[in-house]
Image 1 (cartoon, rainbow, N blue to C red):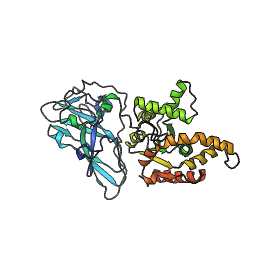
Image 2 (image 1 turned 30 degrees about the vertical axis):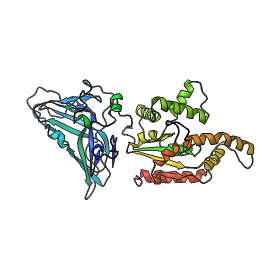
Image 3 (image 1 turned 135 degrees about the vertical axis):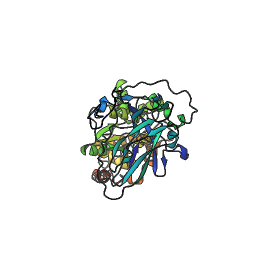
Image 4 (image 1 turned 90 degrees about the vertical axis):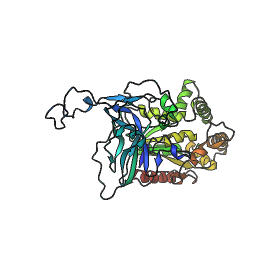
Length: 416
């Protein structure tokens, strides 16, 4: 089962975690459909009189409410909304969507099409109704409902529900001033990192829903990351790299970006200036801007744990770690450069002298500032089953076999 994004993991405080036993708290998205005032006396579902209810977008126009701005639902009014989270259900599980009791006591009824079938994937449509006597103010990213999950007994059939698509992010909607009373109980339902939501038009770590598989490639310099990335491109994955923004900066400054140390300096500069996860956010913006969304993405160039953590908030993301020590990377780099250490010892010594400091800084150099390179800490965030030990003297065939076996198992659903 996948739910993304998860904005609060708890950090030891259960009240701040979206997970509770067999349920997951769902948040209100930014898009709403508000029924028009049709000026007719009746809506006949079969269309014999009045309006038929089949007008779709004409009957329920789409509006967008930005983060930090209110959506007011007046007494006796009804609106459709969408969850912030994208949900993917496996074949063996089903779920029900229920309203949170704190909203029910205010008169807000979340009368959703409550059953979520096995194999469903998409955002969930919520049917909001204010049955109270006063208007209710809602804010995007508030916890609005709960997804209660349980095993699906018997035959599991594909969902016949229409899969809701994520509403377009470019829609503009009316919004009022940012909320003024942060001490309110309901304001506390906004995620802890709400300032990031208010600042950005879209949640930056959500990749397009067309992406079924997102793979990251993590490893020190010379470990074979480019080779692994090329293998995935051959399998139909679209390539993105966290080094791309760094190379763009180098070109703007007229700097030669072929030197590893130059890219390291520029990468550190960007992290210190814009935040530790800046390069990851830039890549995700490029993913969203792509005019032809891909269902498979491969992302390389992770150097800092914050970059990896940003992607790990998406349940579709997995990262392959290439666990290679310095000697292995030296041999691998020598093969890439066509250097035989037993024949051309001068070239080998020259390559080793330049390579070792870059590798040590890339992997984990305690002398580097907090925003610097730390592939070692990135590798520590990966589960053991996603680590590949490339300690075979840089054997490309061995590396290819292990990567293909790992990816095939993941795509078949045998590796979580």
